Image 1 (tube, rainbow, N blue to C red):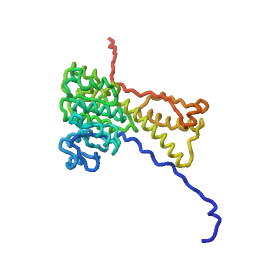
Image 2: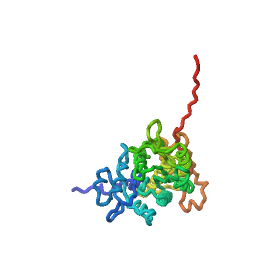
Image 3: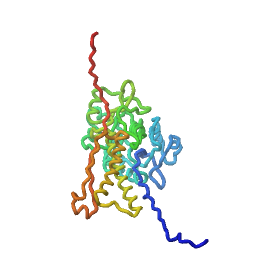
Image 4: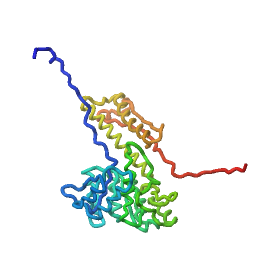
Amino acid sequence: MSATHDGSQIVNLRTTGSKVLKRDFSTVCLAHVGAKFTGVVSGLYASPKEVTDDTTNLNAACIAAAQHFFNPDSHPSQLMIAEAIYESTGGELATSLTAAFAEHPFYAFAIGSRADDDLVAADAWALANKCLFLGQSSDAGILAGTGICDTLKGTASGRSAIQYRATDTEFGDLTWASEMMSLSPDVGSASWRFQRTTGLAAVDITAAQAALAQADYCNLCLPFGGVAVMGDGVLTDGHPIDTLVSKDWAAARAKEGMIQRQLDMAKLKQKIPYTDEGIAMLGSDLATVLKKGVAVGHFEPGTIKLTLPKKAEIAAADIAARKATLSGSVKILNSIEEVTVELSVLFA
């Protein structure tokens, strides 16, 4: 090769940082005592046949429970089944859930047990790990205004939704979770009320029993226009389930966006400058998440308010520590679920 001066010009191409692992909102976990794995504590299943065929790791009761996940026409692409040791049998459910979460982080989960102490333990774990627990109970006390729903209403973690069914093995909780988590919060938001739980009939209770249960924020499958649907779509603190999913989605995606920004800048051998422009850069990332939340139905249009501090207003100690605080607000987009019509009928 002939000699040239080309070697004096060097171009180094830098790309953005590695993609941040995003929180998975679609995988639903069933923690069941009938699951036993070797070397791991959980497995992922993409079809009812995969569940039925796995008689090595799943017993008959676990297989029967898991089938309810695949009942809805629209369900998430995979079901996670995890080993569980119930409080009601002298175990530690929180330990089981933590081990499963470490293998494959999930958001919504159900358990095979209907015992009060297991429901309480699952509720506490959901609160500590920012997950959504769908529980079920056949306790007749619920229909009298007592029982597990009254208990959880008192603690009000706001991360559990309990439904009453007289038959423990129907797994309306898993069916409901499957039906609703099939909608990714990245693309939409929907009320959990008035949703059908495929394959499950309405519970046969009196209006008085329903009123007592609903006063304790128990969800009931009841007829609505002749169709068996879930109601009221509420958490143990009385708030709609969809509002929690929206808030968790926004928090996760905002955090991931900030981390991605830091990784990208680090990869480019740059830094986010502690200037008004640098603060605005982070504010833009946050606004992007909130605007998407508006676009897909989580938040009310026109309600995004961000407060970005000027560097001159920030304490010297925070600047020295390289810490910045952004604040703002946005309103949840509610849904119309109760309608009153006042109609005047006039004579000609």
